[in-house]
Image 1 (cartoon, rainbow, N blue to C red):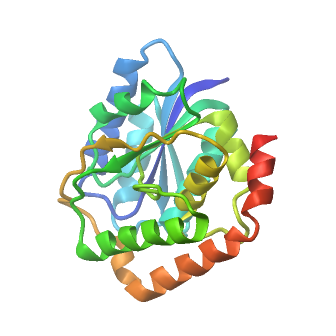
Image 2: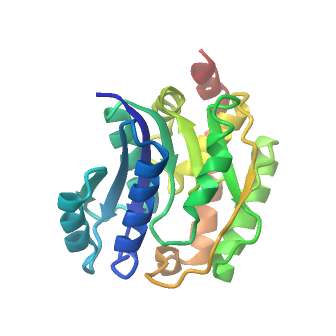
Length: 247
């Protein structure tokens, strides 16, 4: 079986909104693609609350929902495993978003309309409603990418992206090992450097009303230093990875 579209969604301790978000996106898929195979893939990243219980219940009730439960490996690891699951399902297109109810499903169309013009399309949070620590990290990463790679990406780590399945497979084959802290950044850089038009489409970003932000548990400077080291190390290998993607 081939899926036209799979939506990848990591989830961690989102018991207060996970049912709402799942119903929103699965209903969206059924309404927009009534005659096509589509699915929402939720990666439960070792949640400690009732997220797993709710997801397992929803999977029995919602026909276009796929739930994967894993040990806690962090947001980036959950995203990567979600991508792998989408590719396993032979998805023609893969869309990634988060489970915290900060995005609007209607904005999906802005990216979908560009799918024949690029194999890798990003949204960007024109007005971002996040804690100061996250805003700082975003600015830090934007400057780092510009400095290290000589390329400018407005929101390289945004969890609102549409990727053609065959191109995602090429990117995943070139993802650094060991797995980086924020793999979406590396995918964005490789896509941009391989010649894709990312578009950087402005989308709505809402205030977070429920759940917890896992990044707060990390020391800010440790996150920045680790990301900088990973990006700097990858710079030395970038050209060979880009050649492999273009091949």
